Image (cartoon, rainbow, N blue to C red; front, side, top):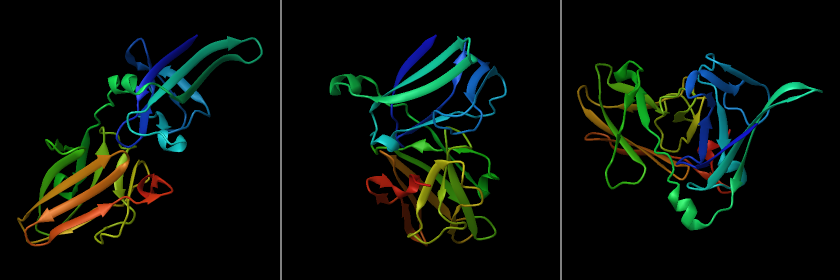
Length: 234
């Protein structure tokens, strides 16, 4: 049979998903390779997804935050090929009023850093500031700390700098994806100083800011190339 759902595109213009049978996560249907496009082998239903899912990337076809996408899952049988599963999606052209009824999912962001022992710590959504999440860090005995961000507590959706130990403000932001191993922002200051860290994500444009009494404000941004943020190109 065929099963369809329509979803709105969220803040980074890409959404990760897998399919659940009978509302039971132990019966997950998912791609053999994490963050796949609608190609390749499909596994399940079973309990071995281990975070794997498809990545619906609206940047590929010019999708914007709030645009609607129709996901279709087909599960059938052919005498020629036997059982088959297929996943596909496409952007829907809908009246503006209908699109406004489908509010994008509010993704959550967490910080992981040296001061959290690299455990995820939820960030707070800042009131009256669109797409801005905030946390604080206290400089430890080494006089420096490092950090990155994780969307929806999914280690396949990390936001990170282009290089390790990033300090220069010209260094680009990348993600969310699974390619950020070993790459973190670095902040420095006197022992015990509190640093306010903000992450802003609006329509796939990402901005990271660190503010402290002694170092002032430092900001890292994504960069647009041909309409697509450099941060989200690999």
